[in-house]
Length: 128
Image 1 (cartoon, one colour):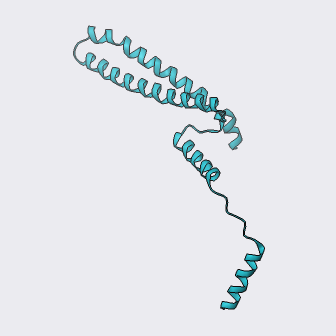
Image 2 (cartoon, helix red, strand yellow):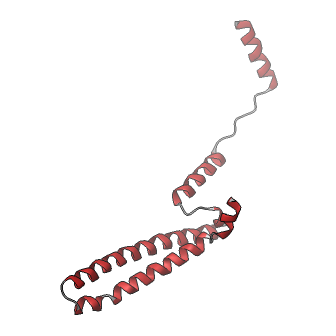
Image 3 (cartoon, helix red, strand yellow):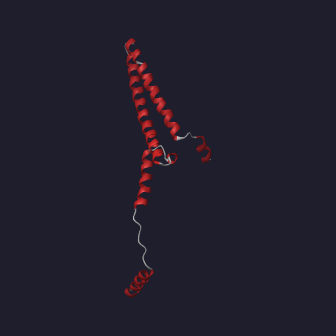
């Protein structure tokens, strides 16, 4: 059942591109509402101003959030990483990268010679 849901989802890059476009449209709509503020009075004017603030905040958020994701995705592609394996949550990406980096950077443990292992086991038996 999970396979059906995974096939129906759009790729994260497409979703973020659509969000970026929606954010731009909200800013365009916000700009076009300026004329309504000039012509209205009273409660209508307050409502238009409230929607202007709402559209501006949502538009800026969508543009920044989507733009940041697309920029980081582009950087990963240029660096040779596989961008399709990352999730939308950037904290998850950094946690996975930190784990992978820690495994690569960890020093290898030296091999203990067989003679030393036997000597240690003999010393443990003697101590008992």
